[in-house]
Amino acid sequence: MRRHVLATAALIPTLFWTAPAPAEPLIYGLQVEQAERRFDDGSDLYAWDFDALVGTDELKLIWRSEAEYLTEGSRFEKLENQLRLQTPISTFFDAVVGVRLDTPRGEDRAYGVIGVKGLAPQWFELDADLYVGETSFVRIEAEYEGLITNRITLTPSLELDTPLGDDADLGVGAFAPILEVGARLSYDLLDRAVAPYIGVHYERRFGETADLTRAEGEQRDNLFFVVGTKMLF
Image (cartoon, rainbow, N blue to C red; front, side, top):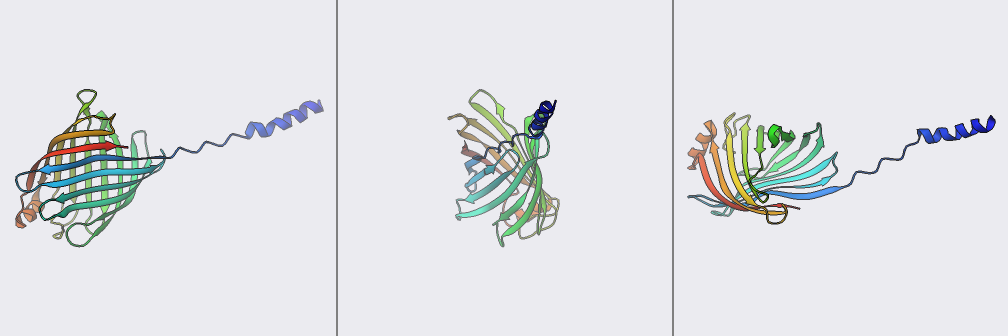
């Protein structure tokens, strides 16, 4: 009897001991959504939009960069860089917090960022961010990849920037948004790693933002033909 008791006692630590969970694998990569040249009747420009990430499925650090570089005058029309932390909050959505630095006309601007990113119904990729700074604003981005064949994809996209205050230096008025819509037809050359594309890109300013744009001698809307490449590493 004593032998059985000792054997049972020896098993107790085994019953309560569990192997440590394996560490989550480190993931990293670069996703270039846009690396393109835009052409219109007035002036041409180069544009890029990419995310570089490192982390795990539970927490990622992302460097996001967006820019527009005018060939006329050799200057940046827009240059945004963000550092974002992203973590899951549901099956299809992640929460995002971070900081953003802009180097537009005039002084540099810094913002805090809070938002969500994920897949909406019908598999639309959705970003909704609040940028808090000297002039805060809300940005909503939506994109959908529609497969035409195994290699040809049509990607419509939409971006809506809504300022929450007036800012003459940035040329925006409160609740007078800037809308960007586009459609890009890409061909998959290397298993989604490299996909050249052609397409169109349209920008339109509304309300006081449009008035400020016209006061500077610029058009309130622009339509571009684009040629570029998507990359994924």
